[in-house]
Length: 206
Image (cartoon, rainbow, N blue to C red; front, top):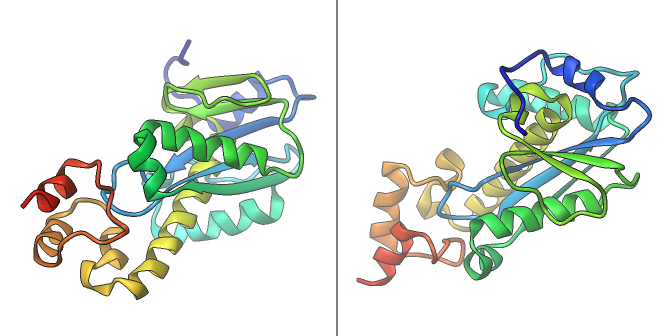
């Protein structure tokens, strides 16, 4: 069952058995029409709480970067993984997101004993898992995963912008903004575009 009204993040930490290694999991990049989808898994250290954790979308770029650095330095373990554009088109975006989540959890150097995932679906994991709607705002582990996934994907889109500058990926990060749709119509789709997404299908069908 999803939780009730949001409560302070560290209250949720206390709801989990303190002796269990609780892993937070979240993804970034389900909405874009270009680029991979990323996911992160984070095991926080209760002895080193990180203040200010929340949904990455509510933070400025600078604050996300600051918190990402803290998370990477203070967490017990963290990992970032992705699913490719080809996997998104082959499996659909939901299944590709779950695949990226599973890869992130499996990449942790300390096995999680329990995983809490933002949203309504859980990936197939080797440990018990719980889906929590709005978990990126209410569960610190999921908030931390949200921040790492978002900053990692943004960095990847900046790297890809250097290879495909005609689309303006440095500004919209692959989301279907008016600018991106105009560039897509002008230049056509490239290998970064998700061919299973309607705006790209329309351009390919012309």
